[in-house]
Length: 287
Figure 1 (cartoon, rainbow, N blue to C red):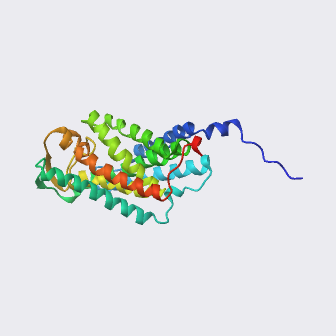
Figure 2: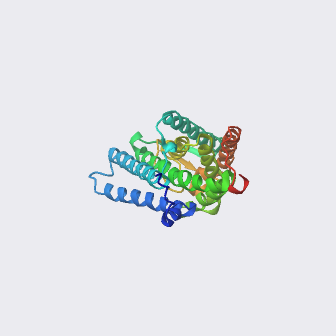
Figure 3: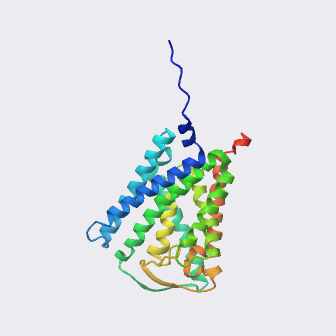
C-alpha cells in the first residue's frame, strides 16, 4: 500500500508565511551576530589591526552560516544566493563597481572645491574602516537583499520589493551619527536601488556585497570621508565642506546629490540589464 503524504502542520504553514519568515530570519541572524560580537569582546588586544580584521571575519562567518542554516531548515532549499561557484568573479566585479562609483563622486566634489586632501595616514589607520566595511557589506546585504528583498519579491514582485526595501533601508540610517532626512532619502535612492539591482541582475548576493563593501571602504578607508555619519580615518586626511545638499555635510559624501545621481544611473543600468535577462518577478496577482 502506498502511504499518502501528510499535509503540512499548521505551525509549518505559519513559518512559511512571508512576513513570519522575514521576522524570524532577521531575529535569528541578529542574535547570532550579537552573540559573536559579545564573544569577540573577550579577545585580547582587540583594538589592534590584526584582531580587528579577524573579528570582522568571525562576524561575517557567523552571519553566513546562520543565514544558510535558516534557508536549509526553514525554506528547505540550497542556498544558491551564497553558492561558491562564481563568487570570486561577482565579488570582484562588485568591488570594482563600488570603488569606481565613489571615486567618481569624490572626483566631482574635488573638482568643485568641496573635497580637499590635507595629509596622509599610515595604511594601518584604515583597518577599522576595512573591518566595518566587511561587516556592513555582508551582514546588511544578507538582511536587506537576502531576506527582506528576496522574500518580499516572491510575493509582491520585483518593483514593489525594490520600493519597500529602499524605503526601509534609507530611514534606518537616521539612527546613525549626524543623520538627517536628506541623508536618509539619499541612502534610499542610491544604495536601496543600486544594491537591490545588483542582486536582481545576478540572483546572488556576492555582487551586491562587493559593491556595498567597496563603496564604504573607498569613502572611509581611502578618501577619509565619514561613512554614513561615522567619522573615519583613511589613507588620506581630508576635509569636506560646502552646502549639505551638494557635499553631504557631516553625514559624508554619500548624502550628496552627486552620489545619488551617480548611483541612480548605475542602478538604472543594472535594472535594465536584469530586465532584459528576464530576471524580474511579477507580483502574485499578475502570474
